[in-house]
Image (cartoon, rainbow, N blue to C red; front, side, top):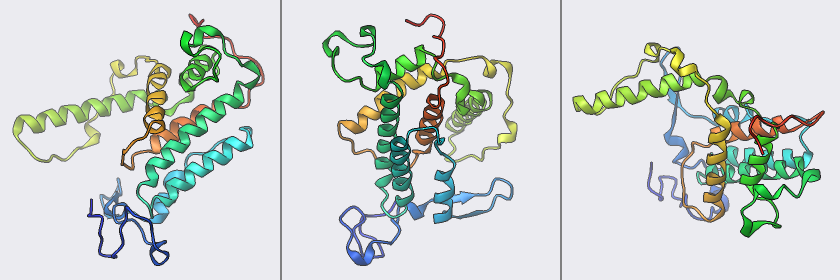
Length: 250
């Protein structure tokens, strides 16, 4: 991380002057890309920025207005190369895209049944959490539609490995340790089913509300939100028939 006043002599937190419009934010340039095969390290480039965000797309079956908002969020991510704070604006916009997609998908099913609303808010336009809960209960989105759930064994085993290495570092008083992911072993316990949809129901509204009510959050780790939103929205469209409710749903 660098100071606000940089060698380029512009304030990266303030309004850009015309001569500095296209200068990269120095905070973006502080990151590197590691080649997993060769181990070579090089500075992050604009091409890397572009390649990272183009992985996440919406199907043509998704309404155009939703796709436009999604691309607005993707462009904000791309231009965060120049303005670091655009990363979190991009994440805020991708959550707005999710909310718009849910409203479009459920337009002819509004208003939602009263049991999806707290009594004090019944009769108001539906917010993100009730709509998510509704499409989950109706089976419009499924665990199998998310990469994180499909790769749960690998992801959970890696997380356990990282926690164990962190504990080892603390016990030995080390400041750093090289991680060798070839040591990760995926056992049956990591392949047990878990309800990723329930995790999303808790996480997405909370993350969205954090931005909606004003936030000074500043980080560039927002690609997972793009992944989740694109996978969720693509499951909503098209729908050739009404999905059957999940077992135990309202």
